Image 1 (cartoon, one colour):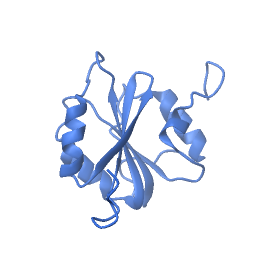
Image 2 (cartoon, one colour):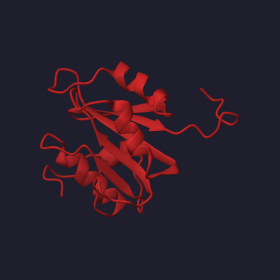
Image 3 (cartoon, helix red, strand yellow):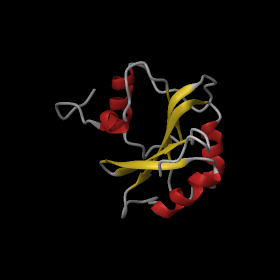
Length: 142
């Protein structure tokens, strides 16, 4: 339910597709309900919460400065992830409360066994796309 007439395109920017299973981690009162609603519309289901135990295609991880250790949180996010699954780390944009330096994500991803592949602009939030490397032999496209 998008109030301002028309879809926002957030889910499209995140590559969310119909029937994908999407889990949301780190929800708080500051998360963007427009992003959440657009993702739910695109995948055709409600977002799974932190307690879900299904295998998921996409994890939306809302992350702010002061939320703790990003590496630990990424390790938690990997656990239910399908082999070809994606983790989107959503952080407040520069100048917004809770802003996270891009270097924190860039440094945390490899430590957690992930590669950062792209980013997306989602209104007041920035999203960083993290994936698990296919294998050391196959993953030579940097």
